[in-house]
Image (cartoon, rainbow, N blue to C red):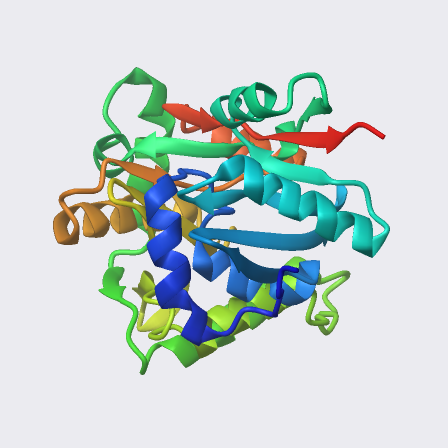
Length: 304
């Protein structure tokens, strides 16, 4: 029987060790994401030998992430099937890559049905492209940044510190108040899933190994972002906020953080800017940077 539990910061060490064996570039295989989104998805983790296994309930229903680690993968899948039966749920595996689908079919031929999860595809970009913004395709991004610099000559980029985290939190609150403003009256924001995840990340910032940056204009935080390692060559950007009324603010924090990560972690080749959740505006924004790779994700459901 698998002993599942809600992840706590102390789990990071062993979970990271097992995740590293699989080297998944998908943002789901990241302890920070598991931890900060645990309430939103009722996410629990467990261990089968040298595999970390995850149970969660999301938009595709209650599911298990494909096991990450090393060892007898077929045995781990059978253990998940037994756990699903005890819960009275179908065995649904999510966040599969094409390689994992082929592996699953090899061990369980014809026993699973598969479906693509396009809304969950991750966008990966070569860090040099985001840091330098070269070429014709990114000409518009350079123009946005030039406009930001012209309009905000006092701008500075800083690394996020424990002292500046509260300022980022306040900026996030103001960001939501402005986005929800109607007819000049701001509505109070309730702590939705994303708000809870961000606040959890800030509360456990050091324990999760997060790194981030912010931009100030006249001393005020107008944009910030944060993330951490996903694999040896891929860095996961978890959160990014900027005041949209400042033209070029998003492009600026994106570029400056890419440059900072490249300078501090020269081994990083890609930035994973995660999925678009099927939100049209977010999809257009991510596509406007022309991703170099997409982490395709699929779900597999065991046939009755």
